[in-house]
Length: 148
Image 1 (cartoon, rainbow, N blue to C red):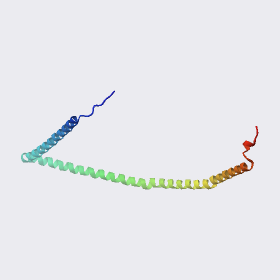
Image 2 (image 1 turned 30 degrees about the horizontal axis):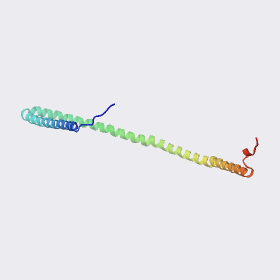
Image 3 (image 1 turned 180 degrees about the horizontal axis):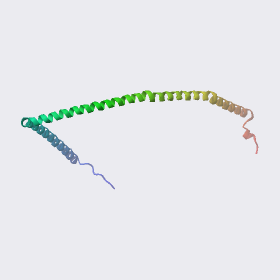
Image 4 (image 1 turned 120 degrees about the vertical axis):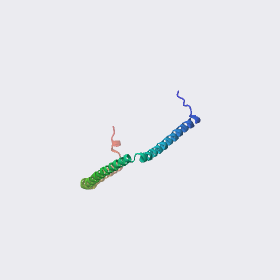
């Protein structure tokens, strides 16, 4: 028999406290890293200016190359969108038109079958039921008239 012990409210608050402590420690570490990065950048700019300029130039070239790559990717994306529009216009539209034509034919066939097959059969069945009912009214049930 498994009996579950209800959660202790103190235990739940301890878990919340621990998670808050981790969040606070993470925020403090992130702030210290940001401050250290800013301080090291300023220190390098003062002491190693030519090196910083070279790194800056390399990063500018990298950003320019990245812009070229993004432009190429956007052109490829544009070509793909144009191809998709062409597929929709020249391949899917005719299929939908043929489907609508087929649905119209099925609708016409259904109307034809309803008028030329189902109505006459229904009418004949109702006439036969009326004749049977009239026959029973005049002569009684033929199964009950037979003697064994």
